[in-house]
Image (cartoon, rainbow, N blue to C red):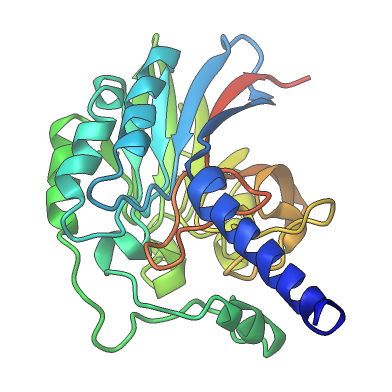
Length: 308
């Protein structure tokens, strides 16, 4: 019997142990990543930017809420929230409570698809099938038929009341120690809400520094920001691949970005220009796939320094 059933039982036990680790430990193993980006003009002091993304809050996630509140202790110069705060229509008060200490700092935000619509149960293997068939990432996906409306308006009102800048297909600016930081954002390309034509034309004259902000790093948006001369683009959405293979990396990005740039700092080239791109792996998961493997949840503290 051991010879006949030992191998499959061993595989089952290993898979079960991996699932327990991925859901019970790694998905709650929050950490801060620190990145230095030499992107500022000469003469500017370094800026500390905290990026939070893909919180996917589900009511009752106390450890995540405590960790998010603790990030205020980093005392960033400003905060950028790159969307997908929700994975539960009841989660708005808990998102606002968890981010409350951070909303004491200047900040700006864009929304992602899960802020607008509740998630649907989906077989994770479909992401691999869609990638193989070329379905994911060409132009984004319209909202699913019957998608549940999330109360994103309450989230928007809370952010706006705190003074965070809404970058939904528009421009904004922050004043940091007398420096003007120009911010340009688009709505989520993943559900075809991006309208780059409304903000095209490049950074405004007179700004000391400029950034492009988007939830999902689709190439059409990265190309547009880069062609327009934005030196830095921040995005989220990918979850860093969420389920990765050790020593190999991500299998999918859930958009048309290549897996080599699924998270962290890289560069993007278009029309002879080069921008820095930072993609956050985020700190949450879809409520129906609450697992991470070889890709722990994160926020990132980016220290922007003068160009070399």
